[in-house]
Length: 231
Image (tube, rainbow, N blue to C red; front, top):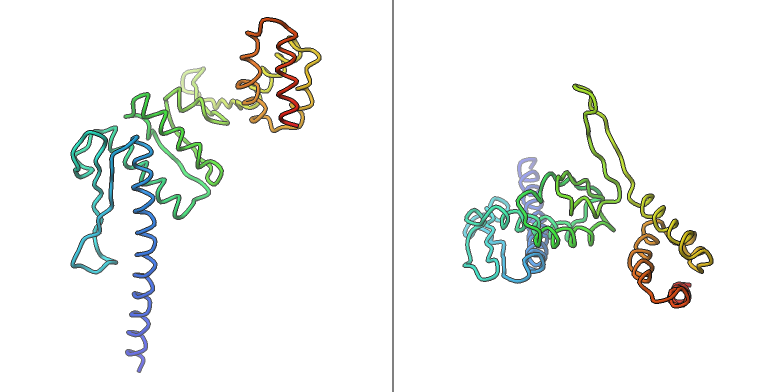
C-alpha cells in the first residue's frame, strides 16, 4: 500500500508539473517571439521543445532569424546577435514571471550603438517591476541609470567607491535654470510637487528648448502654458 501511495503521489506531481511547465513554456515562447522582433526591429525567433521525450526531461532549442538573415541556431549567430537574443529571452521570462531584482554583467559589451539604444529602451520598460543592477563600461547605458557607482584607485592599492545620483544633479541644474533665467517662472511650484526624476525630465524636454525663444515674453508664455497643462 505504501508503495502504491508513493507511486500515485509521484504520478500526480509529474502530471501537475507537466501542466505548469507547458503553460509557462508557451507563455515564454510567445513573449520571446514578440520581444525578439522588438529588439531586432523585425525577424523572428522561436523556442522548440525536443520531441518524443518526456516534457520534463526534454531539451529546448533556441532558433533565431535576425532581419535579412537565414533562420539558424543561436550558436551560429554573431556575438551581438547572441546577446540580443539572450536579452530577448531574459525579458520574455520576466514578462511571464517578474523578478524584483536582476544583475546584468557587461551584457552590452558586444553591442553596437543602435542595439544598445534598443536594449536600454526595453530595459527602462521593465524598471517599474524590477530593479536592475547593470555592470557596464558603456556611457550610453550609464546615462539611463538613476544612481551610478564607480570604483576608483586614487592611491595605489587603495580602492574607493564613488556614487552619483543623477536625479539630484538634474534637479540642481533644472532649478538653477529656473532661478537664474526665469525668476518668476510658474514652474517653481511644479518642481516641488513632482518627483525629482520626472521634474528633471520635464525640464530637459520642455523648458530648455524654450531658451531659444525669440523673447523672454515668449519663453514665459510657453512655460505658463506648460504649467497649466501639468496642474
